[in-house]
Length: 134
Image 1 (cartoon, rainbow, N blue to C red):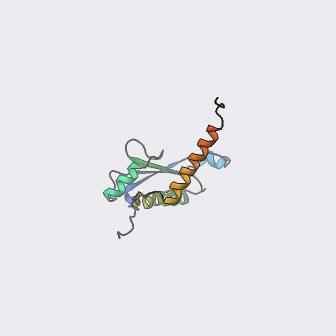
Image 2 (cartoon, rainbow, N blue to C red):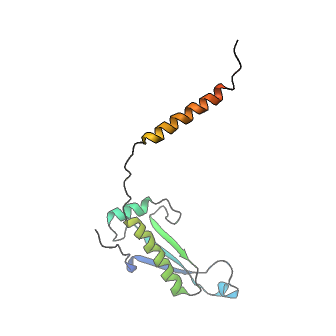
Image 3 (cartoon, rainbow, N blue to C red):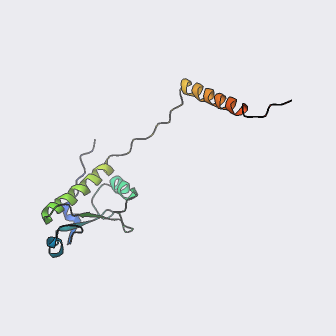
């Protein structure tokens, strides 16, 4: 088994922005929210993890392959920075685990029998709707 994949903090770019929403005058004065930018293609992550991260259909991933995470839950910049890094690490952790391949299974004998009984019953119902012949 491979060791856990860690995001190198030097590959992450942080930008302090103003938070949205309620917060009174503090929201208007202080840039406490953080926008984290992580270039997936240029990172030192293993190639399979990069491919799975880029394949994720997510609005946080732009066309250039840069992952953008906005954190504005906390009132302090360092806590929002930690939150954004933790969310990025969680995303990388989910991409690091390869998907379990699906093994096709055959329907059981009982399920086949119940399916055919249901079709026969439905056919009887529909046959009962027909006009009575001569």
